[in-house]
Image (tube, rainbow, N blue to C red; front, side, top):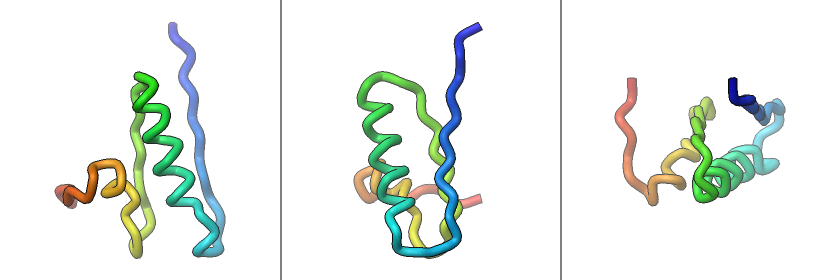
Length: 60
């Protein structure tokens, strides 16, 4: 079975770059051909829109 990797960015303080780093890391991994699942839990800023070039996502 292929090894899987999980990376999590968590910190209570806002404005320190968690969403920016997460979005850029996800984009870089996807660009290199890896499968990426990014789940954004920040109610103020959805960084996944950055990955979709501003396209709105369906909300559940």
